[in-house]
Image (tube, rainbow, N blue to C red; front, side, top):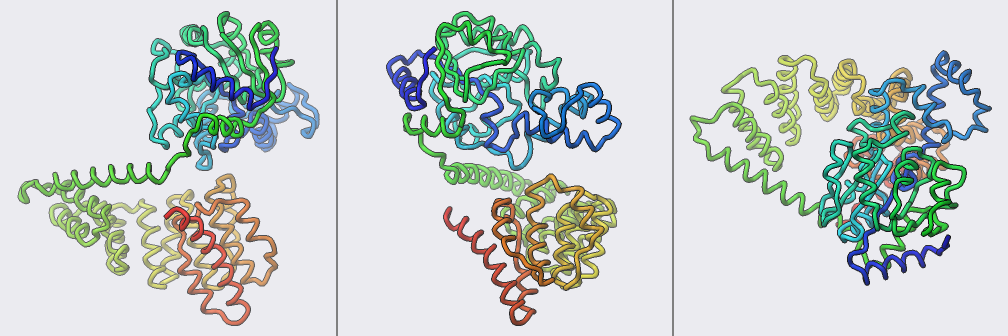
Length: 528
């Protein structure tokens, strides 16, 4: 067995790929590669699920009786990943929904390593990835960078399409979070034969680079033991496969190299430097997408405008109104919504959209009139109540605003912005936070970090108003949350409230507002 330093490994594959253009590398990615992107490792997930299992006493007692686990502080949670997972989520549908929840969290985004890998995949020598992960991080990185898209194989029925050519290839051996993921102990024992055979053919004469993979997977062991012509195996981890399913396979390998490094982002960053890979220009990419989108809107608008006036339907006018609205031409949007209603007085969405257009023009009275007409046609529309609450609040009719926010929550307890707006109204009216509403909010959203940031920002101001010490609270907020979560936040109401105070209270409130506003301004000014 060879052992190389990280830089030696990078130098070796760089030189090889430059000299031998037909060299084929395959990156084999495990869960460790996705940790820095926001997806917990198996041990962390199992620990979280174990704590959830405790809340279901009968199920938990049965589980403990079967597996006789030690005290929770001594449990190797990764070892019991499947047992805990299947006990808490006993049906395939429940299992799939949980995997989707983990991988689709808003805080999950590609880390540095995935962007480097996305760029490297544009070279034919490095354009193939095999992964046990369910997530879409590498696909997302390819899309965000604007690179050549990949063929993604997520199911055994697609095995016939597996081949190496100039198109980047991603093979998910355990499926995708959205398409029957192989996520329980039975599913992961064997890879279906068509898929297994196709992957094994990829490995022939290829150099396989394992990263973020522990090696304790029966199906992967079975897969690799059937590969007799791998040219070279590079294993990047803190140790070689030992006391895991791949131990015997590793022992029998004749060409193998160990690199003692496990940090995926660090590894890919060194590779980025060696291969002279440029950082993504997200703003250029975003501008390209924005321009394409705006052109599509203009084309669609022109097509609708060119329909003869006496041939336009209520739907045509409605779509025109929406397109003008997207172009921030609210007056033309309103004109077209009015034409919709002239043709069809019961077109509920036209009243609702017209209410939003009036609100954008700060004509809140007209906005309320149209929201009311929308609600008369659709009394179950929580968004209409929510937006009407905003309009009343803008007119400082706080009682009516509260009534509408509460009605929206009654219709949809998951409408998180209603809670936040209610908390803010209580704050600027110098009231204490509604304890029952706060309990309900925390129960529903405590696991949603991005949702919780606005609530905890308001709690800082509640504490200042109550003259409670806030030492370290603001720094802690910035440690826990990204400023991006305040993208749609307006400090207008808080500033008006702060300026109504006097003395030290006013100075303290305004200084705290400035801290948040300035951090936000610095972040976004740097990108203009």
